[in-house]
Each structure stands twice: as C-alpha cells, then as structure tokens.
Image 1 (cartoon, rainbow, N blue to C red):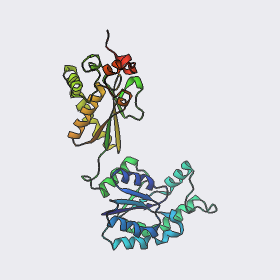
Image 2 (spheres, helix red, strand yellow; image 1 turned 90 degrees about the horizontal axis):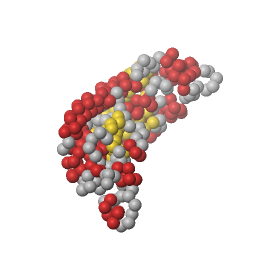
Image 3 (cartoon, one colour; image 1 turned 180 degrees about the horizontal axis):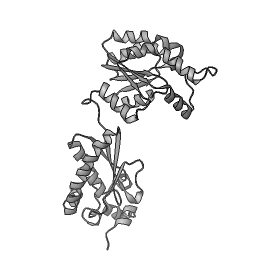
Image 4 (tube, rainbow, N blue to C red; image 1 turned 180 degrees about the vertical axis):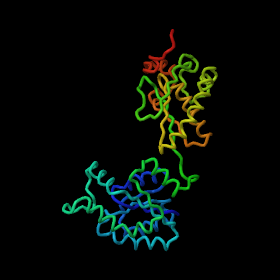
Length: 310
C-alpha cells in the first residue's frame, strides 16, 4: 500500500496537490500531527483505508520536529512511503501571501514575512533531502502540477478516470445549473403527441423505439457520438474530475431521457465512467395520464403544455 507525504513551503501549493491526489482516489488528511502518523499507518496496513496522502508542514508547530522520527517508523512497515516536496521561489511566495492576505505559520508578527519564509525553508531541509520528488511551483500551473503528480506517483491504469454524469431535463423547468455541456434535442419528433405512448417516459421501450426510428435521430446520434468522444478526453487532459452533460427536451420526460441513457451507455462502452440521471421525471405523476383523467384528476403541467391537439 502507498502512503504519500505532501510537504514543503507554506504557499507552495500543498492544498492543491492534496486535491489532485483525492481526484486520483487517495484518502487525504491535512495537517496530521506527526505523533499520529504511526496509528494512521497501522490503519493502512490493516486495510481499513486504501492508498492515502497526508499533508505535513510547519503548521504542526511544536510537533513538527517529530516528523522525521514518525517517517522512520513508517519506513519499517510494509507501506510504500513516498515524499512529495513542493518548493517555491521567495518572490512568488511573497506575492501569494500578499494576494491571499494569509498569515505565514512561522510569522510571529515581529520578524516579518521574508524572515518567516527563510526560517521555514531552513527547518524543512531534512525533509527536502529525503523527498522522492521535488517540484518548484513558482511557474507551474494547476494542470501541470496534476500531470506531474500523475506521472510520478499514480498508477495511471489503476487511477479512476473522470466521472461523467449525463442528465436529462426539461427546458420548461429551466436548464440545470453547473452543466459543462448542454444539448437541446427538441428538434426531434416528440412521442408526447402519440396517444398510445405519450403517457410513458424515455425509459420505456416503446418511447425509445419511437425516438430512435426517425432518420434525423440516427444522423444526430452519429455526429453527437463523434463530438462527445472527441471532447471527453480533452476535458480529462485539463484535469477535470467530473463532467456533466445536460440533455434537454420540452418536459424532460421522453426524448431527453432516452438520449441521455443512450449516451451514458455509449460512453461506458468506450471505457469511460458514465452514469445517467433524469432530473425532471419526478415531476410527473407515477401513473398514466389516462388513469388520472379516469380518476377525475387534472392533467399535470407537462400535459397541458405538450398535449396533443384535439
């Protein structure tokens, strides 16, 4: 099992590095006191936690000198211990602290920020010498840091890929918030106007057959598949952990549901982690519209806006 220790200078990007490790499936702990490292390592050895990464730095205060001894304990265990040290030029650190207005953990309020950075750099020399990887983040983008972490520490084949959620919705209820890509499929023939299947939804085979049998649907799916399978790897290269693809029709009941399921299945067949969800299906009654009318109930808003002409 693998335990990564993320350390280095305050302001060098340890928090960002930890988030990248989380995206790669690591259990991450920030600012763990060195005295607790042996207990945490024991949990790893017992299989209670999978691969993990811990952030340790000068914030440990009086416990910080115990870090090297704790790491020696881990080296005697069955764990694979690797240390990532994030360095940064003084000028870049000064700029970052001034921009964020955060207090340096070693700044006592009297000596000043530059002296605090120098004192921390001196204290971290033993850890820097033991590091498996040193990255100077002065001119490194978040994407470049992620790629360096993946290349150095992560088994690419075992790392979980980007999670893709394909979400159907109805435009009449408003577009979903937070969607990365939004597709409007209201140009496709609407099953709602078919009296025999209008009360069903896009999870039902008659509705699926109705939508898929149209020549325009086939042409659209061919172009859609090509576009999506081109875009998804590009999003992954940018370091996205999640991608939301929204597919909308009028009420979010027929066309968008059928096509969202189709796209999620297609992505899954291509080796991507994809699931489909249907935001607006819960807005519809749990039994057919004909039964509602027989029971004297009024048609819901989806029927009133999409009802077939008399």
